[in-house]
Structure formats: structure tokens, C-alpha cells
Amino acid sequence: MDFSNLNHLQLDALKEAGSIGAGNAATALSTLLRQRIKMNVPRASVLSLATVGELLGGPETSVWAIYLKMAGELEGHVIFILPNAIGTVLVDLLMRRPTGSTKIIDEVGESALAEMGNILTSNYLTALGTLTKLDLRPSPPLTANDMVAAVLDGVIADISVNTDAVLTLETELIIGDTEGLIGYLFLFLEPASAPNLLGALGLAG
Image (cartoon, rainbow, N blue to C red; front, side, top):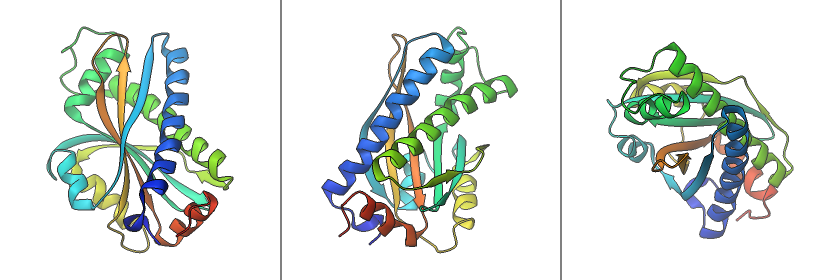
């Protein structure tokens, strides 16, 4: 079984891991930045790579991404991606600048986004590991600011067997009293790891 065959119960379980991770990340960020931050996971879905590209605005859309590899009992990648238009708004909020101040994500902005993305992805993996009791070993995170196609191609090139099914967790970030900003957390698994994950959740099909 792979992600393309998930049923609603299985998808809900993986969404729950995302919700727990997002909640823990929001708590950590609120403490770090000394401002009120909430994170929600309103939707979880399994998408094809082509649909992921469309979701982010098309293959040539500029995005900011943070990603890490998983090793251990699950192998794959976790990636958090924001369109640059959302990233610049987030930098202003995280740095407490007037909205619209950031036009280009500079080194300071990248550092702020990297801290947020690292906390989010690491808390997601912690929540997933706690729920499944699997040994997950994340690599140090890497960041990229590139077109959607380049970011996705780089990940797929690093996965040994081609896969077209990606677990997608829509992530809403609310900082202070602002409207929610949407980013996306993607889980790419090596196909051989999908049964390990679903079996650990007691949901193997």
C-alpha cells in the first residue's frame, strides 16, 4: 500500500499527527517570539506531483521551502513550502515590521522563516514518532528559495523509487490578530516505508 490508496480513517490519523505537531510548533514559536501564534491543519489530502505544483501557483512560481530527510524506520522527506508572496508577509509579522515592508526575502528574513519552518517540521516528526512509536531520524534542515518545479525535482531526485503520491497537510498560521496565512507541509515517503507507517498506526490495509 502507498499514499495513493489511503482511506479516510488513515488520512485522518495522519492529519491528527499534523495537528499535534502544528499545535506544539505554535507553542514553541509563541514562547520564542513572545507573541501569540496559532497553527491549524484544516485539510489533509493525497495529491499527485502535478497537483502539488498547481496548488502552489504553477511550476514557475517562486517559493520558499525548508526540508529535511527522514531515516530510521521511515525514509523520505518532510517539506514546508510557502509561496514567496506569503513568505514576505510572514517575515513582516515575525519581525514585527509594518505590513508590506518586505519585498524580497533577505538573509534576515530567511533566518526568521528557517526558524519557523524548522520548528514546524521537527514538531511534526516528533508527533508522528510519538503516535507511531517508530524510530525517526531527521537530518539537519535545508532551505531553498526557487521555483516550484526546481524544489520538487530536487526532492524527487533524492528518492530512490519514483512516487507520485504526496501526503499534503494544509497549514494555517495565525500571528496575533491577523488573518490566517496558508503554507503546505508535504510528506514524501519512499514507497517501501508506507506500509511501516500505516502498520505502526494500526491501519495497514
